[in-house]
Amino acid sequence: MTAPSGPAVTFVRMFTQRFSATHRGARLARQLALVELHEWGIPESTALSADAGLLVAELAANAVTHGRVPGRDFELRMTLLTGLLRIEVSDARRDRRPALQPHAYQAETGYGLRIVDAVATDWGVLDRLIGKTVWAEITPAGGVR
Image (cartoon, rainbow, N blue to C red; front, side):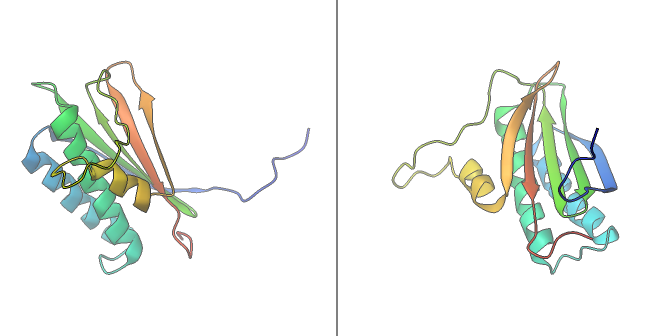
């Protein structure tokens, strides 16, 4: 048996928090994500922090708008690995899966996943026993240390 080839990925840090499925909860999720990244040595002035804040804001807003179930929270999880930051937002509605929509001329909504798709290195959706998890990954040019 041989060891897998390729770069080794090392777990560095993890942050998990539940928030009320409200617009205030979505704003708080973004703010706490930026504070946590700062504590991890990724200050707000960096491109990685800006991209992570944008992804958290979009995924949390989608969880509140499209994944809300009365009385249920949504969960934010950020995992920092060497060379990768993974952001996951879980909500209680499995039946409303996110999908990129065709561009609609002068539409006022529907741009959130387009932003996620443009900023993230990769993103997707995982089913849970109750609800779903939408995840996005960022691989910064210089890597995460």
